[in-house]
Amino acid sequence: MLWLTHGKSNKEIAEILQLSPRTINKHLEQIFEKLGIENRTAAATMSVRVLWD
Image (tube, helix red, strand yellow):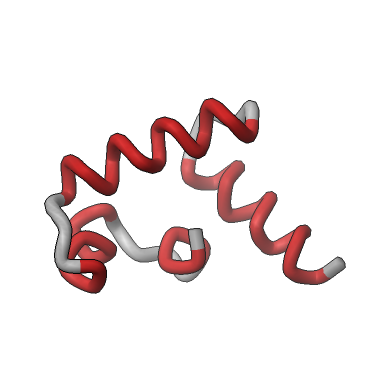
């Protein structure tokens, strides 16, 4: 979520974490479902709110 909040693409996150972009995509899909959100923008917004509290 940190890298997503910093505006990194799945490909960039995958390179940082040494994983495939597809793996990153699947992890993000699962995170979005658990948080009840639908996209990267909502995830980044939620992350910023949590960090500021």
